[in-house]
Amino acid sequence: MECHIRRAQREDAQAISRIVIAALRESNSQDYPAGMPTQAQALSMGYE
Image 1 (cartoon, rainbow, N blue to C red):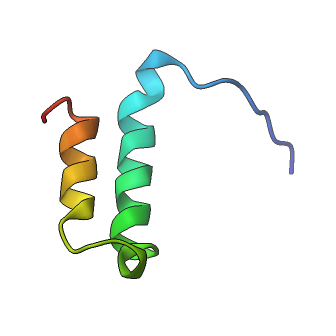
Image 2 (image 1 turned 90 degrees about the vertical axis):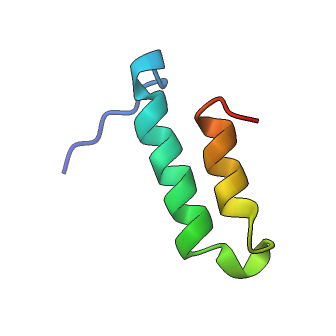
């Protein structure tokens, strides 16, 4: 299988954000306080 690696582009931001939020919710949820994934999602969307 061939793989191409490139730098992230501005248009990749939303997809990258979804991956980070999914990781926080699924695999890392035991490592963070209960509200942390929600805070990360709000920050990724530009809300504070």
